[in-house]
Image (cartoon, rainbow, N blue to C red; front, side, top):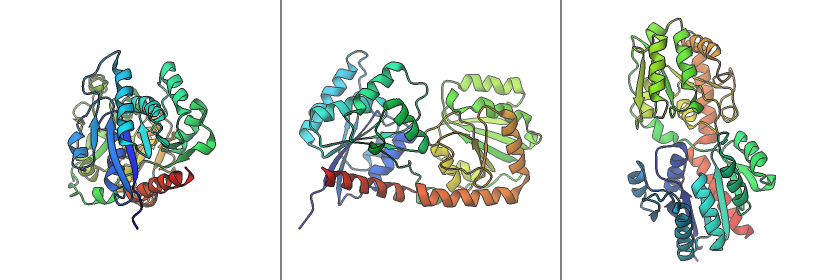
Length: 368
């Protein structure tokens, strides 16, 4: 006798390159299709990852391809309400602001039995209006998943979510996929330091540039900055002011992060705040020594002086000292990389994370 599959609509903003989008991609790819019937919905268009999601061969509904400045929100809500009425999902699972706001409201109007939200970040730069709207519609959610201890604490404090309605399930890293990549050769003539992240204030690249300029062995090193963002011109100008423009490479958005990490001798993540830090997980699996900011969201991954080195955010001198230490102490660096790899593989691998979500979905259905 066959068991009825659980129908889940996953709703996100768009299909651009980012940690939240990667999480949904991995979840949709690996979820047990014998137990679940997933579909994907976006509220503000497609994006660079649209072909990747289409290759998963699940029903996909791309709304919001034409952005309407004032009517957009109302149209998003009405499209979602109509879709949920037609699909009759057992669960609607949302992430990111626009999807959270309109999909939670539409799911409630369509009487979807279970509404779930994954909270992806500590939104310290969020407007008061957005915070009010999120807090208002959070009352409609049956369960919230925080991707880290930091995000859980933030969500409880800012959105007044009851503690019994929020749990921690981290975002994932696909260990097998990363390990199956062909490793890039190391450059024997120089040390490669790499950072990965959007070029925005949150990611703290300007403090890394200042630290690199302080590094005694900087002439024997090269700094790779992977990512795009509004601060790119400003950061390029900063390299000229610091006299390091010949040693810093801005690589833009890349789809071969695993190869770049395998060629690197050191990974640095100077963020000012984080929900979790997917790039740190990927660096751990690539077995690159890690230096990161000592902030909530990173401390769930890295234990100071055991699996990496944590330094105060915005402290370029401390960052330079940590970089110099790991570049000069190969044995300690190797021990830290092994510890980081084991911790991430056992706790953040996609198989582990997807299993936790599947168990949560089934438990919520049983409770209903």
